[in-house]
Image (cartoon, rainbow, N blue to C red):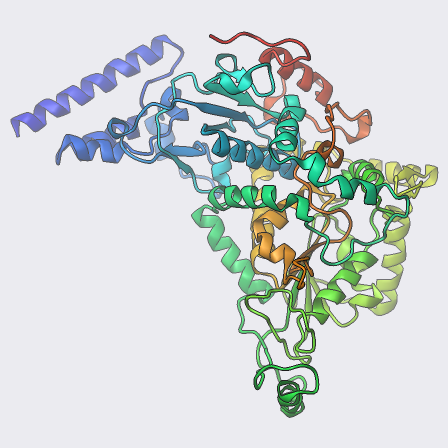
Length: 610
């Protein structure tokens, strides 16, 4: 008891001293009150147990202000964005060595989720290959902390106190960067990671045939089935697939929200499948048995759910990026054309029926009953896409719903009204971009005027995504709204990538390429032909094939990233990070210049790190 009392006095004195020092240094303390309480609670057993209790302490909050009693007594809001760091220690500090080699990845505060997260995955793959410990700084990310969506990673070494200071590390891509124990990377020097990927996997040589095929001038409206993942990229795809398995682990509450969505859209039900009597080609015993069973089934009675085919549609401010990729990849399909999505969904549906010789998933071939009603499950931020997709002739057999609405929700619309809205959608979205060459996406004057007029009509003092997704508008939202929007997005993307019977995406979008990694190579490649060629799996791109670099052209040559000259497509610094007194939005060029000057990453300028 005496020993326990002395321990109590020691802990309280340390806490009082740290708090006093913190007050003299602007309200910062070395350990938060909760962490001190956790350590003391465990001290009644042993010092070792105290260290166990401290495992996973918030490394970012070592310099965080302590909460006051008034703050502790206030009831928490319905949702509070996480402030926890993205990683924790895997064991007590006394059992872990110091990190010998670290790679700092800094999340930037204005770009899209898919773009930034793919860079993060690729940086993680580089760290794994070269033996570095990845440490991510997400403190200023426009999407909030990673722990708003994912469980924290566990690291097996102790980072140095200054691990998040970019000036203490050496930039990736600088001369002799491989010899430095502390590296840093962010999209401020986008091409550095592309250059390493191209050289490490010998992409220029392996993918030479793809470049010739893209540049033949023929163009394509839709990417043929089986070409979503070229053979040249299968190795790098596999490495990134392993990284995403370790990083993309939903936090507990988001897992529960995904379970609710699974039930809401009907993915939790038992499949209505047709049993077969043995195997065989069409006309054999298996097919005769299948035909007998189908004839015995009563239409409309239902023996389970039908196939659910997901579709992700990204429009909004995606147009300039799509135009760029279309020109480089030989895509002639018009931006916003939903017919190709409906066509790909119809093909996927046909391969989920018993008569298909090539099921989408070779290990577990599904044979849905032709009487089981199929569903198109739409994931999009665009308000008009649901109605317009339902009006596509190829979508007529499907029940069309979105991840934001369940069965029985939404308004009832006549077929005439559906067709009218479809034409209105095409005039407004598709008509705003005239195809120039291989889908170059040149803006038509009338379409531009119409979009500007609608934008002015819907603009208010409070930003909103009701008119569709726009990065600048998103960044103008309060942090809590940005996090809630993103949680729904992460939930939907996870469910469709992993559990939908088929998922139609656009690999010209970062989200499409991310979805393919989440589903895995087997889901993208599907069954293989006798020669080993892919026949296409449950996840399919409708335009570009998957590529492992920031830009498709970077597979073959160095591409230096520059801010988009289109001022109207600029994203702005998040609301809470803008400087006071600045009435106008801060643009990307200023942010890029500021980051590069701070990090010493301007071309030809490299700081020397000792």
